[in-house]
Length: 258
Image (cartoon, rainbow, N blue to C red):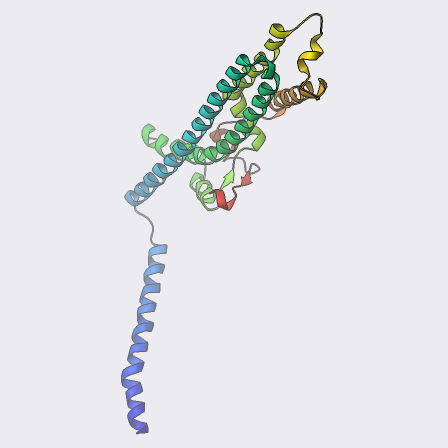
């Protein structure tokens, strides 16, 4: 009986185990050979073309989100200014609220602009160093080791600009006009409602709130916006500063936002 069991083990179970081990070894060899095998030219071009289309789609999606936020801000500000002009007795508080609502839209759009800039930087890197040399029939890329830069950014995505730089970019591009119209409307109400017999201080009083508080809110907001425009470094194109400079590492993109 003992010999029978031993023969059964040697003839049945051992070959199966050997076969399974052999299959695993073959699979490991295939994986190793796949990783060590160099890509052909056509495989490389095909993979990079798909990557470019994917990054371009991401950039377009975030660009559409930027436009959506700007449209929301324009509609909201138009409604606020219209209400303020129709209700002069509530115009001051309405316009001040509108200024800070516009600030909220600006911060939201600046955050979205930072994400858009991540995908735009990759797209520009591929365009300048892959498609550009192909169209020029020049094998030399403008940036050395550009593929490693893109690969590192895919594995560890980073913001290329700070939040203040994003705020400045969107403020100068779009929101400068929105804040300008709100300020003109806020100052213009003085010319319409001012009464020489009462003085200008009365126009800034809101109920029991003293006149200095509304004025202070407006001055602080616009002083902050002017400081951002004057003292924040401007956003350079990705090909000028993002990739070649190893000191410009950027801020990590939060994992939940990728």
